[in-house]
Image 1 (cartoon, rainbow, N blue to C red):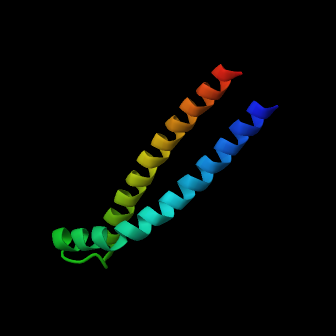
Image 2: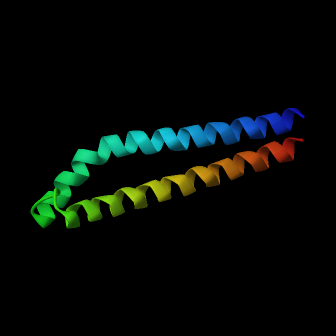
Length: 83
């Protein structure tokens, strides 16, 4: 029973951390990525610049989500071994 609670707690924290990290990362990198796109393509305000910006942010979010999911899997394995 306690192990199930720990796993549920870890899953909830992982979901919250993933969402928070996504928001913080998006806010932190927003201007930097837009500036980089503007340097390469002339302006970040056109459709191509926005499209490239969206792809970059999406790739970063996917990579971090996979990384966090792997960490959660390892934590679940550790909890299962203790029980």
